[in-house]
Amino acid sequence: MASWQEFESQAPELAKAARRLMDTYTHKVLATLRKDGSPRVSGIETKLHDGELWTGSMPGAVKAADLRRDPRMAIHVTSRDPDRGDPSSWEGDLKLSGRAVETADERERAAYGVSGSDSHLFRVELTEVAWTRVQGDELVITAWREGVGEREFRRK
Image (cartoon, rainbow, N blue to C red; front, side, top):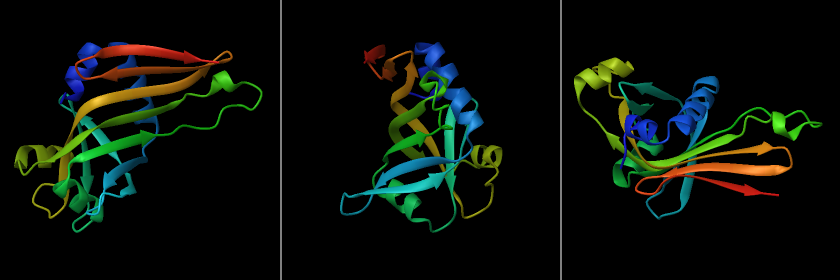
């Protein structure tokens, strides 16, 4: 698993685009696994701090219970719809996957703003990041995978 900083050093241009989308759009969608293995999606916010990607959760939230039981997760960042006359104006969407590791470290919790509370704080360790967008008449996917690196796929 890679920290945000490790991902950023391996795929700097993709990380720059990913960070722009993540900073522009506050609300994201988190996918977790329920106890029975079926998927659950929940709204979240994230924060990049000291080379790590973080997300929190209110006390007793089912997404926190999901992540404590099985840390595998994915995050989806959407963007505005493109101008109908210019599909290339779409900023694209971003998908990140990996696992979320809960921390009890009070310094980390204070930096995120959950110090001394019952709220949950998770550090996201990345295994894959993909940015999908349109350029001209092609769908372009730039993807990074831990241990593989960055690749680009184009489809008409």
